[in-house]
Image 1 (cartoon, rainbow, N blue to C red):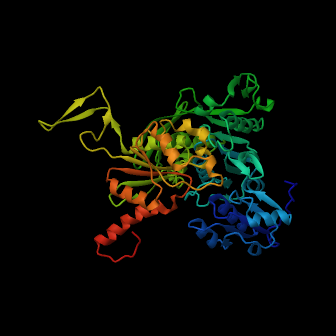
Image 2 (image 1 turned 135 degrees about the vertical axis):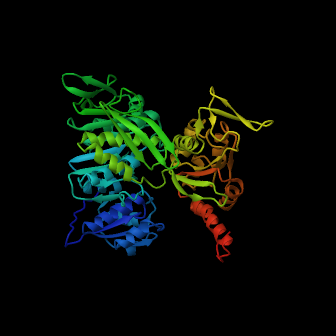
Image 3 (image 1 turned 180 degrees about the vertical axis):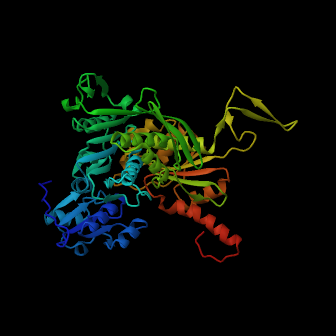
Length: 539
């Protein structure tokens, strides 16, 4: 690609014209609203428009249309090109042919949101939750941050905004920037403060080897300035070949005996660790998980802080601990941090309870698009919905009594029928690559049944696992996997099989084509029929 034409934009009274190709994505829609608030004329196009993004766009007076139409687009001063725009996209072709200035999503974020104090949250897991939580903490602390994260939240309500302060909080995604830029998105964000969560090989379509994946994070660490801050999980330290060495004369620095990262990583910046190990600077412990949320302690010698949150999943204790550590390190009072954590409602599609089936089974939605992420979700659901107590309760059929056995642990519901976990799983394209097969071994051990739905059609479908092939791979370690390629049949199957004590979890980055809504809607229909209401809904 030839050198890109550079944009020259003005806001305020002289409104430059910005068009978004792919405006109905969570991040793109929020950026569009932010640009509108800054005084630009903003329009957008996308394949389709759905609430809540379409509602937000309409409320802010942003013009948009479905499909790709060069005449409707006009001639913008700048075009923001989303990854939804393929090489055959007519609007994208028009932009290139007419030399209209364009940027990728991360380039616009870097230009409009990155501040002198740039907090970036990166890692395979937890980056969306921690960036949203840190944004909320800084807002409540009065720091008026510019921020961006890739999820839907109520706290804060928009996924991106610029409140005018000297701090920015950005989700640092490792996926490629754009079709013309294979570098990670976080390479544009110039972190002065980096929160690095857990790291595990992902996105095999961009990073064909584990080494190449870890290298991207090593370079990110190396980019932190010498007076910067690295808050890093104990898990990340264990897998990335970067040693943390305390130099008593110069302070804490990063060194790499193998010489695998740039020399600038041997810096005098501050390193803060977090996790469950007593060696961590910030240690969390005594995690108690219920269906209503979490309670746990964070220890920073000599202090111990007790935290409560309505978030589900004991892994959230680690995410919160990392955000707590970074917020403390930049000078926010623990009392204010704890209050923000308590009022934080989390991110949609992160163990989000959407409703129940007509039989009363809980329906959970999660963005887990890889076997490793699905495994984490299933472990959490097993702990939450199938708790274990340190007493074995056995029903004596002759006497009807219960016998205690203090030496074993079995589910608290012993003597009764245990609920089942049904997992509907669709991986992203990277985890449909044949080289990722070994990652599926035992990933679904905590699911009683795994259902692979009709998978999203890809451009080069033959290069990726089909639904039937993926099912066979999972069956190697869990025989209870099945492939159902009809959405209606899948919904009917779950309605017939599930019971009140069961859980249905949909794991994947796609929207499941309305199956979740249909599963829940039939529950609403049942209530309507019980009330003798007349309702016309497709069965």
